[in-house]
Image (cartoon, rainbow, N blue to C red; front, side, top):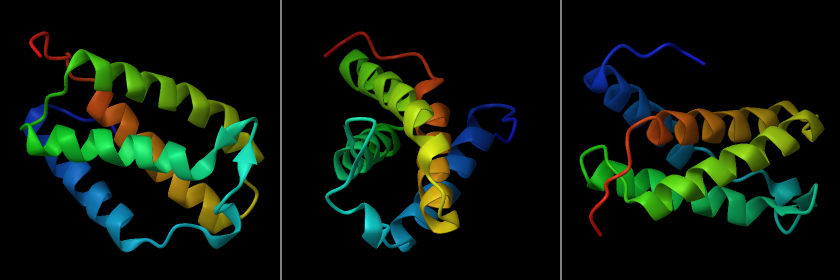
Length: 111
């Protein structure tokens, strides 16, 4: 994980990783797959939804989405050791970075 100094740097790194994520195709072999009981498509979708919301809200999330990200990070920690293909690993490591970066800000308490 790249160390981040300040919110501007965090937002720039998230923007770069997010664009890379949008440009990357979902790993074909993981469509419809589960690892450790975790649906790989849903894991991607949950993180993507939270990151998109974080970006749309100027770098903040509500408490519910913050918890979703924490749960997703835990799931990523379970599945990453099982990904043997470089493309799959790269895709989900990037999601791990995005989830970690966006979950390190304090959750919004209103809403």
